[in-house]
Image 1 (tube, rainbow, N blue to C red):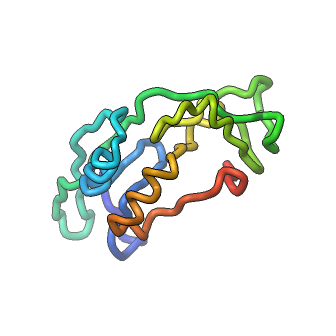
Image 2 (cartoon, rainbow, N blue to C red):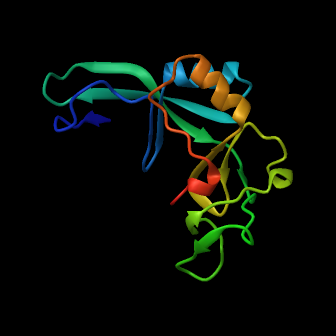
Length: 142
């Protein structure tokens, strides 16, 4: 990965773009919180201006996806017919029974959404991860 010089400042703990990129510190905290469904791969970040290299970030794959959206209670639309993988949510309701007490998972109806159990959210906040943003599902737009 190459740092964008137009975005100065410290790196974020997580980037959820084409790939999920997390600091090693965040990966370790998630594991301490009991999250056990992560595949983790070494990443190298290069500063395009100085050529400095960092190896304290990881490409992360969240293994498994769960169809846990309660579509009847959510506000949503879908570009291609079926509510699978790319649903556009204006507001999300999660069926907790279908989430099955999982600590962290990708939502099958919208793969860009990562659902985090309250217990994990609290553990991360207690560990000082104040740079992360957590949304109540009803406030999720994506």
